[in-house]
Image (cartoon, rainbow, N blue to C red):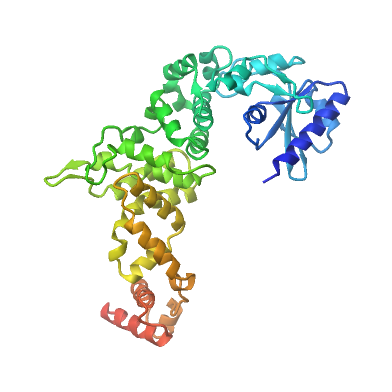
Length: 445
């Protein structure tokens, strides 16, 4: 990842070159917002009255990344800066991109086509001058997310801006200005027309950049949660047994876990595991004679999580990872009773630290009992990687060479060998072969 200071130095150099050629040039957008808030920006963008052709001429080797929008990427080592020509925009007939753009010489026109006032600021980082044509400084001071111009128009132009408003409010701990919030509520249903990939990326950022609980609560208040994640909306009002969950219903339990996840950056997979770990509870709820029960909710939840993540176009790797967190979260209650081999297989699951972190949060946000967590932590100090993944004593080829024909029995035999090995019962090839023979003979192989 590039050093932000290198990107800032590159941006200052590029602006200096533009100004030396008689052009206006400013830092713009999120980098200005974050600098004014005392946050280190990750990216730096420049807006200028130089045309795309002029920019490309001034900076040989730059990449044209948005020809229609006049955006050029300048890279120097690891530092990257986007340089864009001031522009105004026409209608957004596809609710994502303007049908036409007009390159401008006035930075005010460029600021007015942006989404929120706090993102419409421009800065000269050398002099410290701030250009504020949209009231962004006041909204930064008042910790307010406000759409530029008419909020309903901004959201009709790009429906994803409704989720961006939530993300900024959650991460920055700002409030959404009432008219802006009302416009989101009135148009909430149209968010479903946004591509699954864009929705996924915004939800990932809401969950992992900080303020996840606040983000989910805002999605709910504004009507977006029911549109995008109705399975999570269904948590509300689902009772839990008070002896295990004194905190309240499933919604409250999950909100508390999101709040306690810790500061960013957070693994997005863990955040999604937290959000979805109890997604199977609403559909498995039953009031039994002894208490409220959710029989099989982890298994049901894993299938539901798979469907949700698939709907949001998660990669296969991320889908399997998060689904595994959901599927396995209830197994921790049995760790102290597991056979040694079963426990070792459990401990060597991929991404086990995230499984363990999810379990810890689950405990802290329910009855507070962490005996299983403490037991696992102690076990992890006792076992080595070689103990969890011992060298293989036998292979299928060995069984073939011993005179057995390949078939389904091979898997059972090799699993029995590994179990004995994990239990500490065997450590030689001859002992392994004896166990395999017994299994295969018993199966008639």
